[in-house]
Length: 373
Image (cartoon, rainbow, N blue to C red; front, side, top):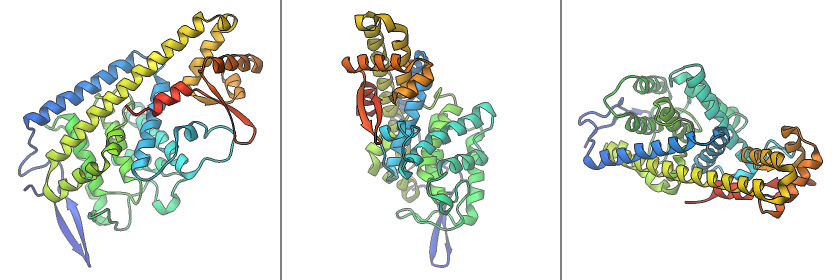
């Protein structure tokens, strides 16, 4: 059995301190089955990249997919809200709940991290991870969770007692080195190793799971395996959450990196296939609705504006008339007329929520985002 770390006893507490990556004695064994799964996961990522390159306005898909990963990753940690609450959080109504704010923070943390590694050309280093954590927990658990700081106290996660606080900076520095140095380990598998190692170090008081899963997406993009954050690995992790934790634990207890990598590659493969199918279905929905607007007589005199309104709904699928009127720079009455036609064709539904604020929901799109494949 491979030894993956040592125990350090301080007082009555036995802390686990993981060995640096990559696994040694023996090194990681890439069996025929693992290599086959590795190829399938890479192929699924390639398909996902290809379909998203064909989408004319990919920004709106990126936003929706990032929010979906934020929701799923947060649910694994027992943080529950809905896409509807997230999409309506910016509208003029009572302040978003703590749970909704944390999901919004996740999406903002992804965006900020990508700016650091893409625009500022920073490698994925401790500085980037700390800033991402700071944004993730802003306004959520508050100072008690020490946003943007490594923990200063011991913690316990299930049967694991992660390294004592004094060891965390050194261990994270070693992990940073492994992330950025050349390795014989294939990049996609290397990312899986980083995730399990990060979770074992457990460097923060709160948010470790979400940051660890966010790191998967960031590293996929940084290694040019994914073009944008359009993958939600938490889809598979949540669906098979017991196995997720068991595989993470078995790395420490049995040295079973191979078992974890097998699970992780399945997660990447299935999540990529799910995101690919969802993108295709959304693309099909848009084409269908564009054809309807272009050919139906009821849209004849307002065709161009109706197409603009449809495009807006893909970016903001829940909206009041005033918001759409302002963003499209069109008269209130014009937008109202278009939305009435959209209701007749089951494109939107009308809801009165938050007192008298009437909102229009882009139902077929929301259904596709929430659909379980």
